[in-house]
Length: 294
Image (tube, rainbow, N blue to C red; front, side):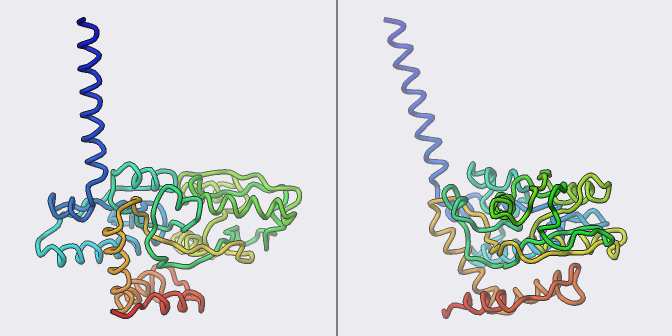
């Protein structure tokens, strides 16, 4: 009899905990932010210029400036101060942090892919780049076929990049195939490149430009190769949070239409920015297409 009662009590406690857990997960994020007065955002720490620590030890970057615009939009929406809590993320942790509810949004340099869409939502694409190679200035590597038999570094969580290189190998572009070496953060991969542990580092050109610009001697490095893939970036959002996604997308569109987006872009990627990177015609067309009417 006591065993049955204990079992019944255990079932009740389990069901109660499950209901509370589901309720917590299912709470609309906008309602949670209004109720708690807190929004939690994840940013990169080692991805120049999207999110990194500058020489003063300040957490800065293109992604953080976008996050501040979203934060201000939230304060305008609710008519009160909202606390912004910042959490670090890297290619390995960025999706789990959003999926498990640790953060409300992830802002960095994450490519929108159909595979990722199975477990997470994305905002509208707001950045467009492509994958190339960073090598020493005297390297004989000029394009992807030159990687044959070489050691190539890349982000461990950059699944789109890894699959892009795997496709190139499968198509016979790199024969014999290169050896892939994975790193949690791009700055760790660049350190390996500087130490001669790898022959090239492979990722998005926008990130490579940041690595080169922040090197002790930028002229010692060069970005080479065709665009192996095109990479549209989106903000990471939890699934089944339609109102939150709509708010983020509306905020992005308003930032673009107001000219604030180009102001932020020029700060980081303009001719006098941290990482000069000319905006291509495809990217300009994307931003124009996103300028939806009110």
